[in-house]
Length: 397
Image (tube, rainbow, N blue to C red):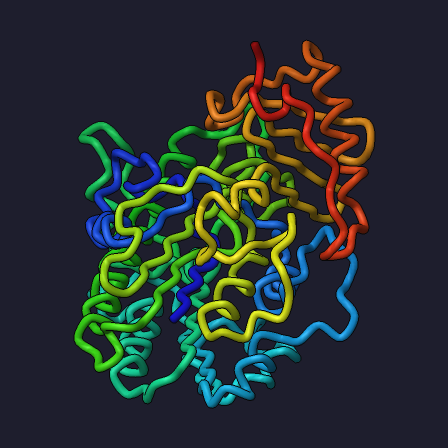
């Protein structure tokens, strides 16, 4: 089972270091899972993301000739594939037709917050997903895509209000996901209200996740089911003067995503993987899980099922691309570019929130990372990438 929650950035969850939002559902999931500390989306475009996870084609790589889709691989194995979603954008994608079943959750048009969590869009989706788990006949692959934070922010107001201090402004009452580029004179109280509203949605999601995990554990397939929980992209909340989907600047709050992989019988429970991982590896992992993996691993992707010593060499870099932007991450550095002449460089993992741009002081590292980007551009899946310079692995001296 795969659960994809749109616009859920890693930084909003307790297992990734958030200390002001209580997320017991995700805490529990992390304690049972292999958790990837640095999962990076390769594209903030939803269609490109699903090209990666359903076809194994990294957004940076050239297309693979006649590459089988994940559904196509599973079609010959008697595995029923079922997509359940409340995203109209995803439901309208041509690739969706390859699933054996498609369940669309209607989106109710509302202009105010609901009274109870059970009336929210997320709760309706997750309740349907829980029923689908209990009704599924093995073997199956159930894919749940939630519009998440790109959909209605309709959680009850008290979920937002719990985060406000006595002297904070009243929690804002809105349901449409905010989108705004901040100028230097923006109202900090407005941004604080947006952050509290987002936190309320995360609390709602966490409760829904607990319900779904309980349903999985109560199902017939509990003892031999793989559960993957992730997101295609995050939701900026003012970190770099951006709120929501106002542009595609590839900072960490947009491209660093959560990724949990829960194996049967507690295998790899509470293990944290520090290697860089990207969405195309979901394709390899699921194909490997169902024993239909059609190719060897490469720098673009590697199955989570590989022993860590075999996969380490595949996880020393990550690439992201969007219109007008591209980025590369190595163990020691993160470079994001806008056009060809605007570069921002950050030390990793120390500068977690990408506050201190050191591009002007480490032009040598900028040049090396630009060469890594150039080397990766247009590579096919099987083509090797060049070895990283040691400074890109170790970071600053």
